[in-house]
Image: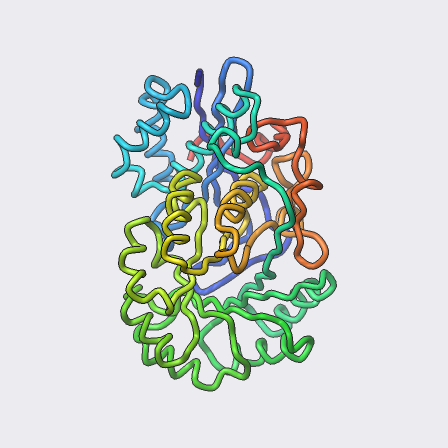
Amino acid sequence: MVSQLSLKNLSIPFRIQFEHNSAVRNSTQSVLIIAQGINYTGYGEGCPREYVTNESVKTAFEFFKLVKKQILVAVNDLDSLLVFRAINKEIIKINPACWCAIEMALLDLFAKENQVSIEHLLGLKELDGTFQYTAVIGGGSMEYFTAIAKRHFQLNFLEYKIKISGIVDEDYPKIKYLKEQNPNFRIRLDANNLWETHLEVIQYCKHLPFPIVGLEEPLKNKNISALANIYKETGIPIILDESFLYLDDLEDVCSYRDSFILNVRVSKMGGIINCLQIVKRIKELKIPAIVGAQVGESSLLTRAALLIEQELNEYCIGMEGAYGTLLLEDDITNKSIMFGYGGNLTVYNQLDKGEYGLQLCIEKEKIYRFSKSKY
């Protein structure tokens, strides 16, 4: 039973500034939902982004205010949560990040009340194994780039994602620099919707100094057929992120399935349950995917993403995030879920086996230190 729901605006400072074509960040931009039951408390996180799903912290507060009373009346277990989702699917669709936080908090609470993991509550395999992450390097000068890259070299990363500017003289030296360190590095580029036309993208790709694994979101207009043409002309798979938000989007993609890699992010997709439906369809279509992350996620969203990667299984070709306190000044958990050497994260070493639900120990003092109750 849910006795109380509250929303916090979570803003944790970064240790370093992170920038790309669409934004510059010095702290997290997240909403935290706290679902209080009689004996347990559930927690959930969402990252509203104007340039991804047209959401902001302000719109998240507005949506929460609209649905809070309805949830307290109508939702008291997993079955009633699924009914509420179905009835309210249209408004949830335009508020995916806030709903992600609400749903995660409720799932965490219900699993705790049943004294099981969130995987067990959802009828999934228990979380286990080791997950390998990608090094993500933001935009900026060559001096900044090499400094951040060297930190990742020390951790022996083999997968890299570079935020690009679209300017050949700025971007190409960064790719060359990585390949000079290790010719076996696998590199992806993220354009964050830089170019107007597919012809501009093809021209940029024509003289890339080394082959790349994929190019993420090169076009502003997010036209699927134009994006497929880029793959046809360059042979470089296009990674869909902002162009891939809903289950319905897969129907547009399936005609060009060889052209694309899909970026699945729990927050932008509207939560764990939506992601699981999308994962099921991805596996049916046999399209490769990356489990992505918003910059500055806390351990809550990192934990949720592990569940999604495990369900994707062999269709997952990369994971992003899990920077924890390497990027954040602090986390809201007693220990931050984060990768280690080789970009590897081993579940056994990360989760609190004495906890149910998301199996994280939340430190309430940290929540109040980094949050505001009002927008």
